[in-house]
Length: 215
Ligand SMILES: [Zn+2]
Ligand SMILES: [Zn+2]
Image (cartoon, rainbow, N blue to C red; front, side, top):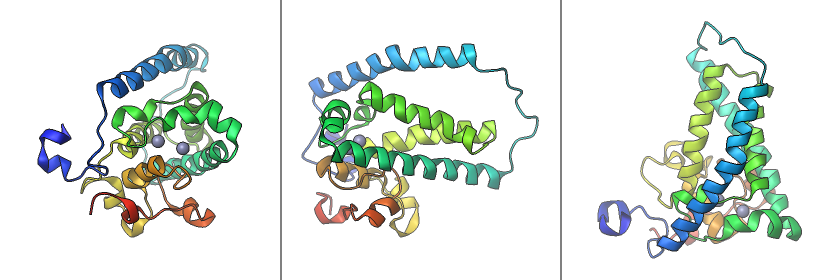
């Protein structure tokens, strides 16, 4: 809608770029394929083989929930940073598994799940396993999963809104949509999906304001 809604368009990170019907169709096709052949079987397998669990009677304390969600996000951020760096630096890994996600240098929400099966299985594995490793409460786990889906789509939405997570979190510690949009423009920068500290430590951080079209 951005093109037809000037108020929204002012927040577009690459205002001259928009997804076409063909790109939307391609991403929808890949997403549908991944969900039918990977997500659905994995969900059925989990439902069938996971031992029965008793939901705790007590909800977690609010601070416990917030700390758990942030802890899960930080752990995933580190795991994906390493995976992502390797899949850019080792050419075979890039071409075989990650190149499909870089079909689009101007991401849009549907590009979030435009992933190879291996990448989807890896991120799904960590997202599922991390709350178990961190012994998170079930409510914390579900809150993390919902937020994780939200921030992953936000990373790819192509807009840097005043309410985007990177604007709500202070001191530039969260890269978010503007940081990850930059990764799609300059694929050797900003490997961490959410926070910015790993890229700063490894010298791969790109300052978003430097080349963003939005002034
Ligand atoms: Zn991406
Ligand atoms: Zn990448």
